[in-house]
Every structure is written in structure tokens, then in C-alpha cells.
Image (cartoon, rainbow, N blue to C red; front, side, top):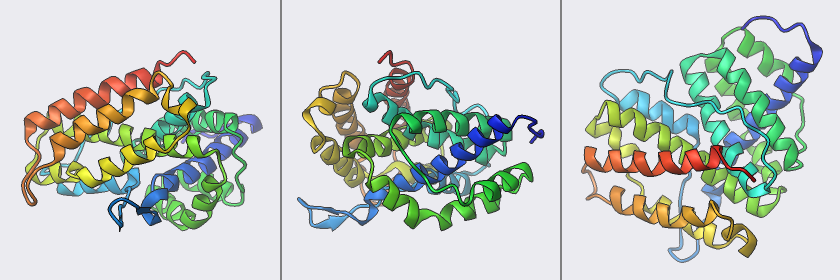
Length: 269
């Protein structure tokens, strides 16, 4: 990474890195919560785990550059739109780390910082400098290790945020992860790798969480499209155990997720 000469840029970057840590582990927030109707636990994987699995299961390594638009927009006013975009930017930051692209990572860190501040997030900055140094040194593996160590603390902090926002951050991050994964699989289909998105119980769980948010959140013009989309995707990934998700289904999932992410990123409120 090129050295920054402005203290303000460094400060904002460091704050963004902390929020990256917070929301990344927020994506796994519901891993420890039971699905009451089914009396079982559902794991919501972080973007890191999904993208690492995609890389390892693909016959050829994923070309991470070009999989994300890396939207830098942060001028949203609705807390629902802010939360969805914040989750989405976290997945994009992980794409940047997979691609070892410090410039895009920096952009996403700054955007996340701006979005998070609108949600009133207050995060302990104790590991900021260490994170910054690791990114400057292009030590991406250690960056992910440090993020892992922050899991418990960041989960607790996210739990204290607005409950509607907490759910929407998770859904936004998961949706962008699905969008990126289905895009990669659409252009380079692999049966083994398709198993990453074969998780109908997870989709049922996320739909259930969306059903528990406030009426105001559920009636938001973008949020109200999410539950029907999750149900449609669930039907596409609901394959017999051990069977791959068909290539045609992957393309349909990409079309659905791509449309939603475009609406989320281009939201006017």
C-alpha cells in the first residue's frame, strides 16, 4: 500500500478496519441462536469462510478481481438502507483481501466507517494500528487471523446495535456474498463448489429473522423484497443431499442477487 501523508485519511482507514472486524463477525452473529420452530442451530458463515471454501473447492483458483463493484456510496439516510449496504461492503472488503488489493480494501474500509457512524457504532480501536500495519505489509493471512481473534468482542458490540439494523447487516453481507459466489460459479461452474450455496435451512432462518424485525423495517421498499427473494433462492438450492446445485440454478441465483444488490447500492433514501 502506498504511504498516506494525511493523518485524517489514516484515522478514517483505521476506523474502517475496526468496523470491518465488527461486521465480519456480525455475519456469524446468529450462529449461536436457535431456530425456535425447528429447535436446531443454523450457522451463518462469514464472507471469509465462504470465499475461502469457494477458492479451495474450485478446480482452478477464483479470479477475485472484478467480482465486486466496490461501491463507495455512503450517502444513504434510511438506517435500513445503511445497514444493508454496510453488510454488503464487508463482503466486498473480503473480496479485496482475497484479491490482495490494498487500494480497494482501503476504499471499502473508508466507506464502512462512514456507514457505521450513521448507525451510531462505537468500536474499541485498540487493534487499529496493528491492522493498518498488516495491510501496509500486505500480510493478508495475518489480517484475517487478527479479525478472527476479534470475533467474540465484535459479536457483543454488534448485539448492542439497533436490532433491525443488526439483522439487515447480516442479510446484506450474506446477500453480497451469495452474489459474488454465484457470479464466480456462473462463469466457471464447478459441481463441488456449488455445494457452498446449498443451504435451504439457512435461507429459512434468514427469512424468519426478517419476519421478526419491526413493521417499519419490513415495509421498507427494498427490505420487503428480501423475504420473497430468499424463498425463491431456497427453492433453487434445495437439492438432494450430496447433489450439486445445477448450473442453471446458479445463473438464476446470480440474476436474483445481482438485482437486489443493485437496488441496495443505488437506493435513494
